[in-house]
Amino acid sequence: MINRQHLIDRFVSYVTVDTESDPESNTTPSTAKQWDLANALAEELKAIGLEDVSIDKNAYIMATLPSNVEHDVPTIGFISHFDTSPDFTGANVKPQFVENYDGKDIVLNKDQNIILSPDYFEDLLLYKGQTLITTDGTTLLGADDKAGITEIVTAMEYLVQHPELKHGKIRVGFTPDEEIGRGAHKFDVEKFGAEWAYTMDGSEIGELEYENFNAAGAVVTVEGKIVHPGYAKGKMVNSMYIATEFINSLPRLETPEHTEGYEGFFHLTDINGEVDSTVLKYIIRDHDKSHFEARKDMMQKLTDELNMQYGRQVVSVEIKDQYFNMKEKVEPVMHIVDIAEEAMKQIGITPNIKAIRGGTDGSQLSYMGLPCPNIFAGGHNFHGRYEYVPVESMIKATEVICKIAELTAKQ
Ligand SMILES: [Zn+2]
Image (cartoon, rainbow, N blue to C red):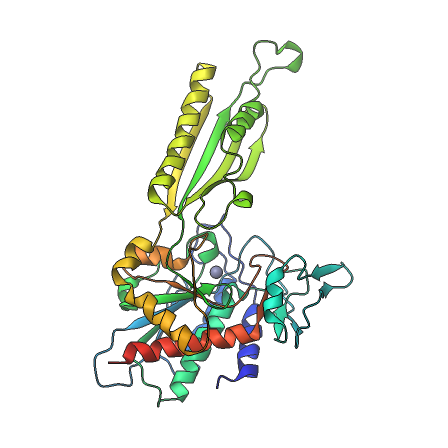
């Protein structure tokens, strides 16, 4: 049995260290404070008895649990990220505990009247009777992805302490900067040396994912002409109006708030405008490769049309691919998904295989030669004050890791 209190204490020790990443920074890790937890994690991995513990100059951590069987078993890996999202503050996280959850509203913060309610977050009702860890309403929790780290460390510790459980060589990898899309890019796949791996970075218990978005970012720049408003007739070009035309010409219902499942979208993330110039930032997402390409074409065509209409180059667009759907890399080795599915079934979890509406470290790693499906870590409502994680889900995720190790070693 996994030691419940030990797991809780471990999780709390991680989330109370601020590791928010910063997309504006060019260093790796993007924020120096990520070293605080990274260094502690490297020490902890040594302390629980893992071998070859390394932390490189970019704060990527790797470690090994050696095989305890004679026969050949493929080396597998488990990966999580220790940074938290810059969308919401991760400083001074004060986890709160709701024991034996009764299915009612949870007051996160009495002074500020911040309520976590099943009326709005129905998923809460899945966890009646369980222990929830929440925020105090003023920060995110950081279960994304410190729940994943907790589960991996706890599973490795359990396997070290239970040599009767047979497994092959297991590699552990912890990365910085996943939340800013840079968790994988300096990951040394060759040094990691696993045949495949799993990121423990999903949400609800049972989640198992090997499809994700194809992703690109677009920066649209609109050039206007500034003239004194009193003398502007026929001369002024207000870039903000042209930018508005651009925005309104994209399909209004193909946005995150109107889509689900396999539906892709354009997401306007940022507007910065004045008369002279306006910059729009978009992200483009689609599971289907051809639809993804069509979305990028649509932006380019719209740009060309507006330029034609104004008789000069008023709009320019720069589109950069960010990551691709890992399905292409995982489908040829589907047994790695099957093992995870079987592991869940064997410990009484109903697997919920679905497409990620986002990316993970694993999607990039898959394209770097390390096929890497994603498994639930247990948390909900990531990147904000309503984030929470049921302790029972973290325990189950820990058991899934141990079971995958065991099934992989079965001849
Ligand atoms: Zn995450």
